[in-house]
Image (cartoon, rainbow, N blue to C red):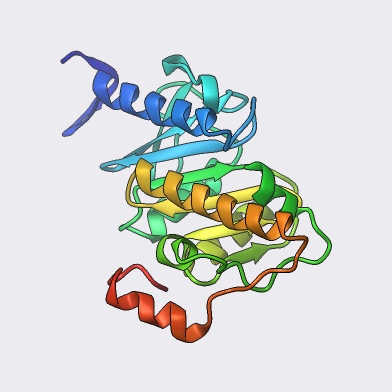
Length: 222
């Protein structure tokens, strides 16, 4: 298989890596988790990360719009400028070695809740939410997109959460692979749709019911 874009020391990015990244980005778009230039995606490959380029449309991402960044210090290595949110993407990858993929998106119902004055205190309307997203969804106050303040707040929230809602902005998910972050995004979106469509009159799982899920989904409940 031919190599593409980057090869240094023992690290190389192959054409198939780029294709896999593009396929995941396009799936994010097909699921309506991002629209046009909203959202961004990153993926760890060794000591570097692929990051969707600044201003790119994730649903239509092209290989020449994929930035390759050194995770340690954020340096772009292939001349493509990464997303303005790359600071928190790379920060999460640095601080959490078990995380390989970060997705920032703006799905409709979850973003509706992100923009609501009074947000739910509990999102656990179905078992899928605590099993895949964690039983507590962190809420990050509004900061300007791309700002150092937003990056700092997201990294702090993601130190102990895999799923975060950004006020008046969107969501961020961390996971082991593309399927993991997409699944988290879909299940939070489903929970938020249930909450919104219920007119904010909904039931949630009890603490005991969530704890009981541990018997069936060992290691997923947080």
